[in-house]
Length: 427
Image (cartoon, rainbow, N blue to C red; front, side, top):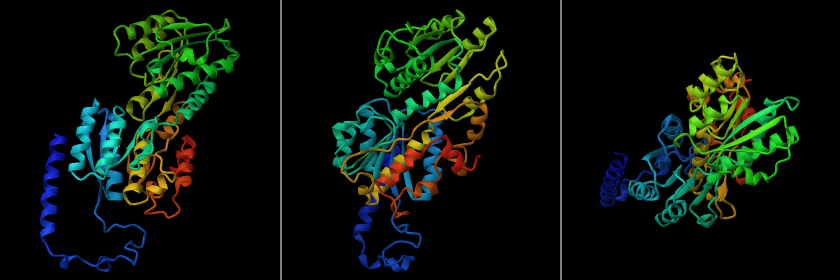
C-alpha cells in the first residue's frame, strides 16, 4: 500500500511541476511579502518560507517500538521542522530496499533514513546518483562508501559504550565475596552481530575482573562460541555457561529451561530482550528450586519492561532486576539531524572532512525498578521524548548558528541516563 502511495505521489508531483512550468514568473511573491528578513530567514533564524523537505524511512520491522518511532517522526518532529515522511512497510532484503529508494525518489524524497542494514553500499551508491542524502541506523560506518558525499553517516549505538554499560550494570548487581553462577545469553555474537559480541565481551571482562577469573581461552574466542558451553573460570565459586543463538530455534527455550532447573545458576545475563522470552521458564525454576534468579538484559521502553520491573516473583524479587535500554527515537533524532543539516545546505557541519560520520549514542543503564520508574514515561508524549523537537532544533544549523561537528559530537558523548534525567527534570 505504501509503495503504491509513493508512486501515486510521484505522478502527482510531475503534474504539479508541469503546470507550474507553464505559468508566468510574474506571480512569484517577493521574499519581503512573506515576512522574511533580508537574508530570506524569519526572525528566529529559520527558513520557514521554503517548502517542506521529504524524508523516506525504511523499516526492518513493525514492532511496538517501531510504532513509537513513527509517531515521534511524523507527529512530533515533522510539524515542528517542516518535514514530510514516507514510511516503508517491513523491508527484508536488498531488492525491497532499492525499490523503496526508487519509489521514494520518484515521490520527491530529499533524503532517506534506513533501519535496514542489508545492501547499504548499494543503497548509498544509487542514492548518490539520484541526489538523495542517506543515513543509516547502524553501528557499522560502511567504509566502502564513507566518502560518497551524500552519505551523511550512521546513528547506531556506540559499541564501546555498550561494553561499558553492561560492565556498569553487572558490577553494581553482584558481590564479589559471594559465589556466582551465570548463564550468558550471547544472541548473535557468534554470527557477527557487533552489539551482541561487544556486550558478551563486556560481560566476560567484568566478571573476570570482579571475581579474579582466569579463562582458558581468550575473551574474543569465548564471545564467539557457537554452541552451549560451560567455560573454565579458574574459580570453583564461579560458574559461567555461554548460550548462543535466538529463541526461534527449535529446542532453544527448553534447553535454557533444563539449565535453570538444574539449580546450578542464579543469574541470566542477556544481550537481547529476554523478559518475555524466558519469563515462564524462569518462574518455573524459581518455584521448583525456591531460589531467586537475577535477570539482567537488554530492554525497550514500554509496558513489557514496566511490568517486568514492577511484578514481584515467587521469591519476592522483581521479574527484571536491571536493564540496558536502547531508546530507538534517539537514533531517529540523530538521523534527522544528519539529513536535515545536509538537505538545508549545511553538510559541512556534519562531515567537515568529506566523510560520513558516526553520531552514536550510548545505551541507558537502568539498575532497578526505582530507576526505571523515573524514566518510564520517556517517548510517551511530546514533552517526554528522549529528544524533543526544540532540542533537535538546537542541533540544526538553520536554527542554531553555533552548530558544528564538535558541537554534535559533544551532544552524543553527553547522552546518558543522567543526561536525560536532568534534561527532563526527573530528579
